[in-house]
Length: 158
Image (tube, rainbow, N blue to C red; front, side, top):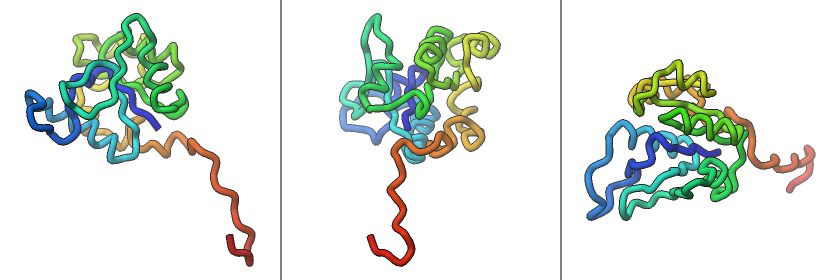
């Protein structure tokens, strides 16, 4: 279960590291920490802050959504892309990954929806406020990634 984020790529969302630079934007960092706590694998598609323990994908001219999924053995049906612009929403759409968009890049909700965003929120704080009702509520809402273990028939030990 993977959250791929372009909108929040510059956020140092893990515990602060000595000398890691300026403090993160609190709502962006909190959103990513909450996704991590809920069982999502977080992949950032841009360069993270220097020294931050963050998996980033930065392939100029490449497909950051597919590259991010490849890095963590993810699949489109088990991923959500958090985007902040129409090109990012379109990249998610090309990769068949559902997209939650944030209006933080100056793009309006109708533009983001027209590009294919399933949800649009004003910013990370607004998404955090309704997280339990969003695509990011829980990874298990997307179904199992791995086949379930075979059941042991009654009366037998495994």
